[in-house]
Image 1 (spheres, rainbow, N blue to C red):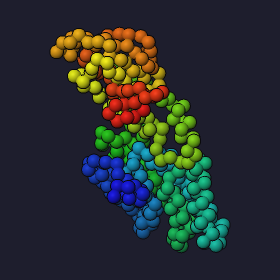
Image 2 (image 1 turned 60 degrees about the horizontal axis):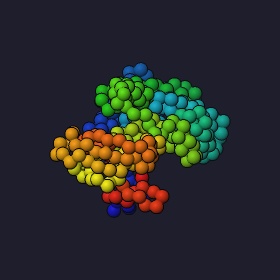
Image 3 (image 1 turned 90 degrees about the horizontal axis):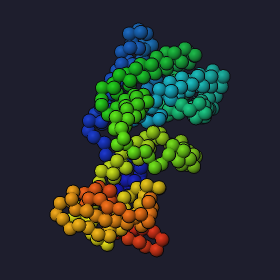
Image 4 (image 1 turned 90 degrees about the vertical axis):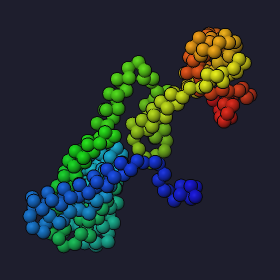
Amino acid sequence: MKRFLTVLGVEQTPVSHAERIASGLGGFVSILSILITSEWLLHGATYMLIVASMGASAVLLFAVPHGPLSQPWPLVGGHVLSAVIGVLCATYISNELLAASLAVGLAITVMYYLRCIHPPGGATALAAVVGGEGVHTLSFSYLLTPVLLNVIIILIVAIIFNSLFSWRRYPVYWYRHRQRLSRENKGAGFKERAISHEDFVYALSQIDSYIDVTEHDLLNIYDLATEKAQQQTYPADEIKVGGYYSNGQFGEDWSVRFVVDESHTDDIEKDTIVYKVVAGQNRRTSGYCSRKEFSQWARNQVIRDEDNWKRIDENIDE
């Protein structure tokens, strides 16, 4: 069943109930704000010319507020530029089928080149062509009301609403800023990444397609995963003389120690482990530490298999 769901593209990432409810509440508040503000400013029936694509924008801004497609420039640029293209196509191309198709195609292309891809922008361009006489009568004023007005309102609501939740910030810059401050507060305890900015940029460039996740999000996932791994320790009572142990690190930080001897005491803080580094960083050196310190350093017990070191429990390359 899990494989079948994967083939269908069913998202299986666990998300809390609080996040789901907050997303739905944000969508409700944003659309209600657009309708109320439009009625107050425009009066009469004109306020009902809310662009339907704002509903799609609400999904992005409140369900995935940290996503690259949800940020202010994609939101504003995507809608406004698409509206311009839609009005131009509706005005100068008499064949509605051709005008509608061209409006969406050009909108996608322009958004791509100007780095403001926002999927609801395609609907904004399409609405300018197939929206009927009421929209056609607006001509270029369609850009201001309802498009720009709707965009400004939903942007303001997104900034205020998402700031009410500790795990959210919008724009995502403020979320990253808070994470950076948190890391700086850790001081010397924060370890630099083994994977550099250039490594991520190169990897993303090799995919040659738009990825709906930012480099910062990938780095955050990497940090969370490595932080969890670093918190794990190897059981102190399972460290044996004659065993090989790895610290599970990457690149130049990786090493394997061979336990040569121990002092045979029951206190893990006083029991001394004597070891020799047989692979990786500081190879061919020897040292000693308490059993507790060694267990905090070690992540896996490993064995030598031809040219590779493999974990004993899972037989995974080290």
